[in-house]
View 1 (spheres, rainbow, N blue to C red):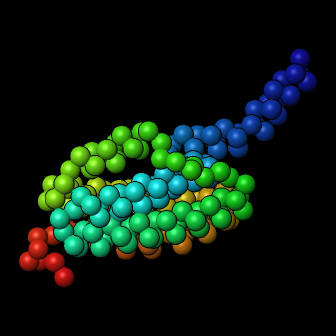
View 2 (cartoon, helix red, strand yellow):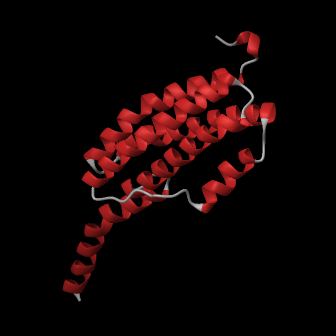
Amino acid sequence: MKGLFCAVCCLSVASLPSLAQSRHRAKGAMTDQQFVDMAGQTDMVEANLGELSQTASSSQQVKDFGQTLRTEHTADYQQLQTAAQQASLTVPTAIDSAHYRTLIAPLARLKGAAFDRRFAREMVTGHTKAIAVYKKEADDAQNASIKTYAQAAEPVLEKHLAAAKDLEKPKAARK
């Protein structure tokens, strides 16, 4: 009986790190694979919306920003693929239906000034959320390649956020 009690205690103590790790993940931390999935979806959506802005926008500033998004998120997606390959992780290759339905479809129905306002608002919201996730991954990533990728991508997202905020300003207040 005493031996059984010792065995149960030892197993309990041995499983504490695993339990703590799963609790940590449950509180908002993501695995590297989850981060790669999110980053891949983000890059594809941003590039797609950048392309959409070329035909839906009535503002040259929005079109220029959209072109920047398309170019830089396409390049970022390629960097993500390299980092994920080094970490033996998979990158999504198509926009999933949830992202399409919530992020692309609503904007695809708009044109002109209505598109421009919604696009700017969505870019501020999306980049603000993405920056928070990238910062967390830059600190918490399990794989060095993914950590380095997140650290390198964060300044680009910050630049996009600043440009998106500038789009929201009234024309007279813009730089």
